Length: 256
Image (cartoon, rainbow, N blue to C red):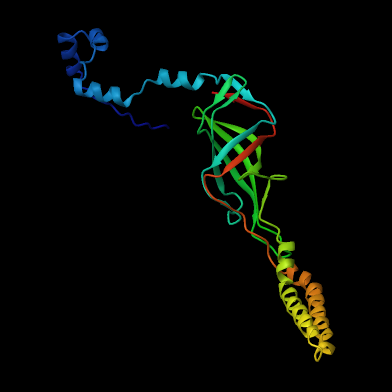
């Protein structure tokens, strides 16, 4: 035997009947809502940008403008001090000294070039100088960043080999300085020998100062390279506003 419970709902439809008598239900669906107040319309216009214009800008393709050929040398000015204290990865900027005319394009004066320190070290023993290696990687033209592959060929009117900006190697200078004691002593002993030779009573002693000076100079000369090996070279320190020359390793094509 199956027993089921039945629920009955008593709905009051008198309200619906009243609406149907006084209003056309089809017109209620199509009836337009009243316009927003003017101040709300202005706020809504400010919140919603012209999306059509934004999309149009995004879809506009970059146009080829021209190029600078591989091997072109570009004179630039440094914007900050460059030294062997800069760490690897440090950003460095330059700007063009004057206008550059290339195929279909002109690079105005003041155009920015961006570089990065690839390697650096301070002066080392064996009279080895400091080192800074810069990688020039981009140029900003018409608010558009264009990648480039460039390196430094001149810094402060000095030729740079293999992009290595190096401090002075001071081996020979250090060697000369380290023998200064022996040379000065030898000069004094030579003068003393000459003076003793003028006096007959002391002429027999005249060779001794000369021999002593010669021995000291010889020992000083032999040991000076050893001292020079443990001496350090010169620092790299190039002030802001110094002239550099960047050479391009590949063609640079401009699109914007």
